[in-house]
Image (cartoon, rainbow, N blue to C red; front, top):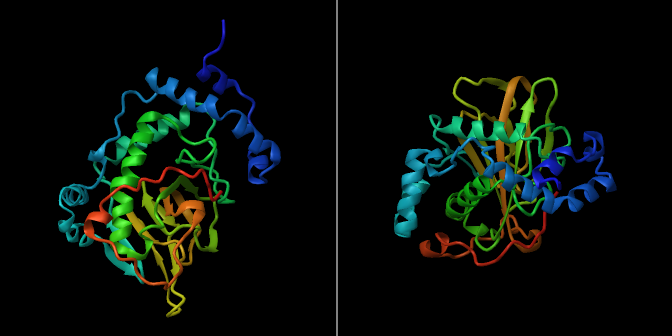
Length: 303
């Protein structure tokens, strides 16, 4: 009797974490050789009730943000209602409540079941010190291919992140046809810090997934403004998000207590193209901002 894709995925011999962090050639071969197997395994896992019937829908989003977004898709001329929800907390860095804290437990429960599924997930080992998390976008090998999650991910990127990015950063229009995403889990005593860097994105959205009362200390995101020399560490509250150009230098401060959970999501153009810093704004009408690009995934993954 032949094994199902799920059974095969659960029993496959996996590369070690050290091998993944070192990006050994055998690791790339492992993900490439098993790409279809893992995608089918996630479908079987969900069909067998592995997600326990959990539905990820737009009720997860903050009510004010959700209503403003839906209103703007119906009438792009109302997009200022979205912009007003984002506060500039550092030069060219904006913050807003993104997920409803009363609904966030649903997403976390789903992700916990994913972590317990036993199907190999590629951690974001482009972040050298991060020991948790997963790749979220189909362009990445070993990504979270569960259909319920992918439907939610596409809505988040297409109907929320992209139009918000175009509204706050007009120069990203046209450099936002491609999506990329991963989750991270910072743990005190294991993940110490992330050195100053810029992202290979036109725009980055960093969403905190901690629940109310799920405290952590440290682990602020430290931003640097090259123009003024200003440096500041910004902290996350449950369900809040920071959005900024990928070119803004930033780092993660050491986490000293607890754990921090985040989605980190990128937009960029085909082949990894991003706007030139200070290169001027791209003219786009409200109707154009509230649209979904026709371009398909080019398969390029930054890491």
